[in-house]
Image 1 (tube, rainbow, N blue to C red):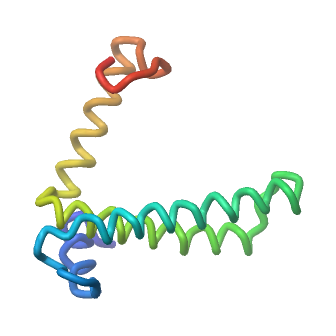
Image 2: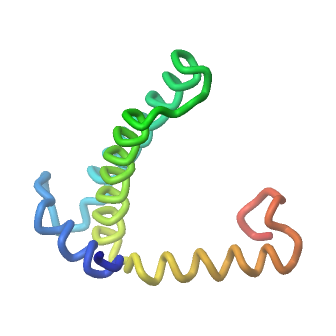
Length: 111
């Protein structure tokens, strides 16, 4: 199972889009939005068609879409010169600090 650094490195070998590797963060950002929309559509259909119960088939479809989201997050991070391992560690530290401060349920970025 790859770690984020390995995933990020390998994701770049499959990245094919205009101006790849030249700071083109717009393309993967738009792809991320599109894939996120696909997840939302599948969840909407779970509510509409299945009473909110996720079948194994839909779970597998969602897993594939989440994989696409991960690929776009990875590619966007690379285009921005960011490291996914550091992003993940920083996010966990931020959430732990919010939990300790009792602000995990609050709103705003700087809580």
